Length: 121
Image (tube, rainbow, N blue to C red):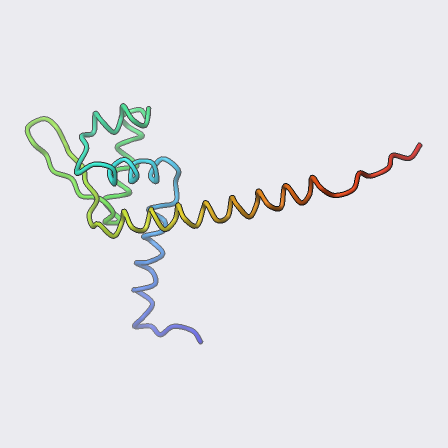
C-alpha cells in the first residue's frame, strides 16, 4: 500500500535523518557526542583527525538534519546530541552491526570447513 500525499513529508524527514547518518565520520562524531555531555569543535577535530573544513561540513549536515545542536561561547563552539534518542539509535545500530558481523563470522567459519577442491592438471 503506497503512502498518502499527507504521509510523504514524514517519510522524507525520516529518509533525511538517515542521510545525515550516511557517512562514517558523521557516525563517529555522533558516537563521540553520545559519550559526553558536549564537545568543542577543537575536541572533535582532535578525536576525528579531520581538517577543520571537513569537520565543519559534517557538523553542518548533522545540524541540518537536527541530529546535533550547537552553542557558541566566546570564540568556541560546543556541540551536543539534539536528543537522547540519537544515542539510543546509535546503540541499536551497533547492536545490529554486531549481529551482522556475527553472522558473517559464522558464514566464514562454515566456508572454511568446506571440503577442499581437488586441483586438476
